[in-house]
Length: 104
Image 1 (cartoon, rainbow, N blue to C red):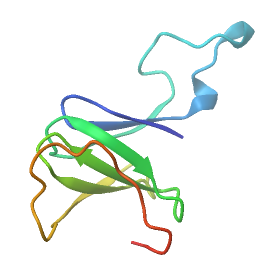
Image 2: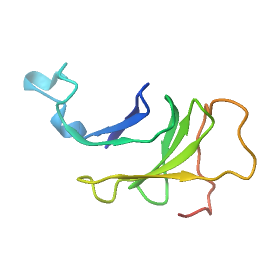
Image 3: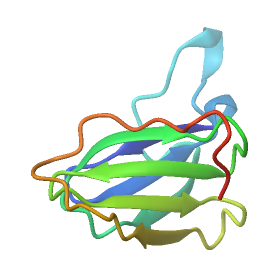
Image 4: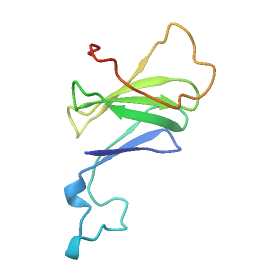
C-alpha cells in the first residue's frame, strides 16, 4: 500500500499494483488504484508513517498539531482516531514514527 496525506486532511491509500499501465508506465489518473480514503480532521496532513508492528495502522500528524491513528484493517471502512496528547503540540507535526515496543 502507498499512503498519501492531503491538504484537506484526507489520507488516501493506493494499491501500487493498480497504478501501472502498459509498458511499466505509471498512470496519471489519481483515482487509479485508490483503495481507501479517510478524513482525519487534522487540517492539512503534514506527516504520516505506517506502524512497523501492524501494517494496517497509520500514524498521521496534522498542521493543527493533532495526532491521529488511522486503521486500515477494513479498507472499505477505514477509521481515524484522534489521540489525546498529554501536552498540546505547539504547531504542525512534521514527523511521525513509532517506538520499537509501542503497540496500539
